[in-house]
Length: 61
Image (cartoon, rainbow, N blue to C red; front, side, top):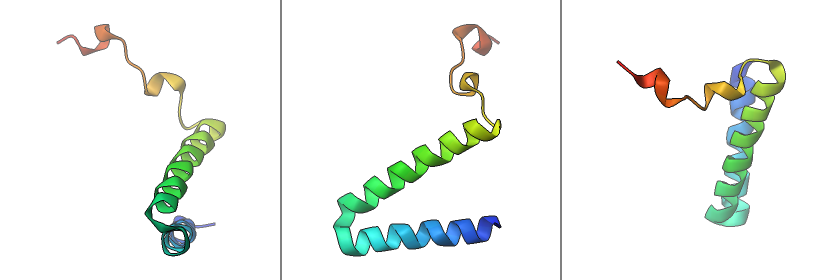
């Protein structure tokens, strides 16, 4: 499935949630979509847990 189709489906889901459930439902669907996206990237192997957390030693100049 192309990224354009995935974006279309996500946009439609957010639109339906916003229309029928209000702004709270819109935010809930958006947050759960973001969590699902990150989980999918972990499962595909595109992300590692260390990508989010850096030690203070990495920022030394």
